[in-house]
Length: 221
Figure 1: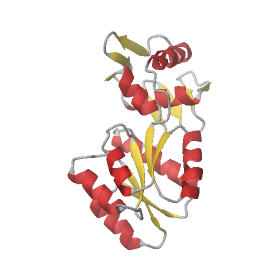
Figure 2 (figure 1 turned 60 degrees about the vertical axis):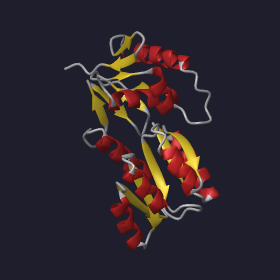
Figure 3 (figure 1 turned 120 degrees about the horizontal axis):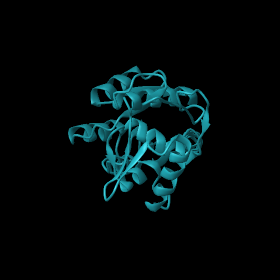
Figure 4 (figure 1 turned 45 degrees about the vertical axis):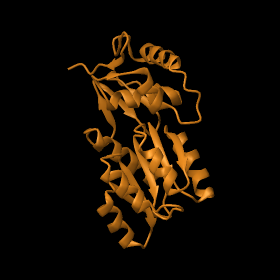
């Protein structure tokens, strides 16, 4: 999943980016409001973590501009722990959730997962589709037989995107945009390699190739 982290505190950015990447997110960073607004409108992000106290343009203005332009990107707002008025302003501007600073990374990860699941009309808890359950904390997948199948970081990101978009045709470029960050070498042919690996682990019939279009993750039943 592709995440936009909007924060100007360099120390916090470094720690959050590291922890988020370890947890299966492809992370891009915007350090001011102008850059954040531009990147958020690129339509390649699955969720954003937005600080309100930004240089160049406030987080509230960024959020208002996104929403007024029809941008429904799920957003978790970061606020000062005791700044209740910031939380109210954030919700009025269109925030989906908030988290007060300082916070534990485990809470942020739990809120991100819950928000992403809701945005895709998936029930809470673990992501389960077609007899497969994705353990997002351990980055593994559990089929109906019950054994745990380990996934690499890229396999995990790709499978999570498939499970959030079952029975939909997903082009290679779409998958590439949501699996890799801006700094990655985005060779769409690499997607073929990871689809092949997922088929080897989950079964050949799980992911259908649509020639000239992309792939469809099948959710039988």
